[in-house]
Amino acid sequence: MKKLIIVLFIVGLTTQTFAQDPIQLSEVIVVATNYKYLNSVSSEEEAIPVQLLQREVAAYDVRKSEYYDDEYDFYTISFFIPDGKIVAVYDKDNKIVRTIEKFKDIALPKSVAKSVAKRFPQWTISKDVYLLNYHKEKGVKKVYKLTLENGDQRLKVKTDGEGNFL
Image (cartoon, rainbow, N blue to C red; front, side, top):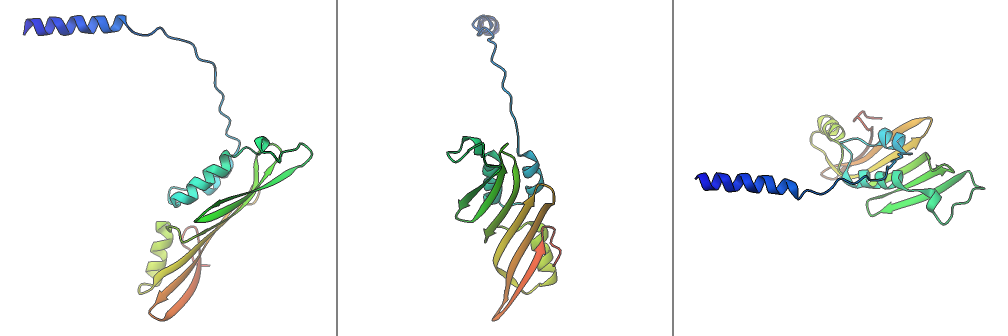
């Protein structure tokens, strides 16, 4: 037992002598130009494809695009995935001015699903379309267009992002 403790003590001392010398790394500056867009549009209840595409839009650098030219004030860029699309307008400083977003058949936020289930208990949601409009100065407008079915009957309703019926 004594030999084991002595061996562990010696191994503990020797491992510290082989540690690497500290090196100085260059300073890295991270600039989040479109954080206002992400803070405005994203929430924890958003569907994963929506969040991923919104992050892609926020991370896009229009200045590195082949279409970039200092003469233009605004650039319209479209982003597509199978579930939806986002059309974003950037200014010449790479800041998002406004977006139009449309997603089909995505997972609904809990607040919207609960609101629909409470008001229409015997109905099922067969289709949904999520529309989001972002404007730098006007803010965000979220609308869910839902098609409900109950047997042979169909009903179309609209809700906002919190589940309030419009």
